[in-house]
Amino acid sequence: MRIQDYLKKAGVKFEVKGHKPTFSAQQMAAAEHEPGKYVAKPVVVKVDGCNVMCVLAAPRKIDLRALKNQLGAKSVELVAEEEVGKIFGDCELGAEPPFGNLYDLPTIMDKALEQDDHIMFQAGSHDKAIVMKMADYRKLVEPKVLEFSYQMGS
Image (cartoon, rainbow, N blue to C red):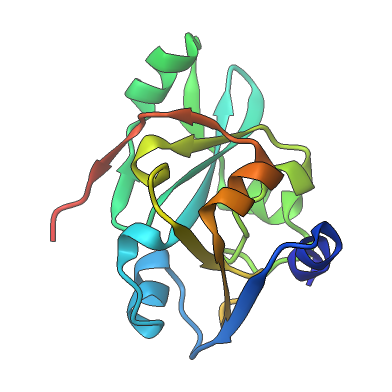
């Protein structure tokens, strides 16, 4: 997988965990017995015609209006799954890692993740997860941090 090669080359410590195939960040959190607040899910949005990766915690939902206001954008909309599949050609659909920088996408991280000591995310497939220090993730990705999500009901 491209993400593992990138992390090895960057010299950061990370752990790869295998699990039964999962198809959402919340399912992966449950399979890995990891609180959802540490599991990052990437969501690709189109901001004034340009693709941007937003990274938020598994149990949270993106607030497009808040994102639009904070970016001072005219339009913000979700990118269709088919287009996401084309951007992340080396990943299984729905298992993209939260590294927009590897795919020429600006990356915005939700403030709710900011204070976490570690981060877990899909490793490009539905049956592998990567765990690494949040400080290393932020150093590699250099995401812009904004407040653009809300807690989903249980």
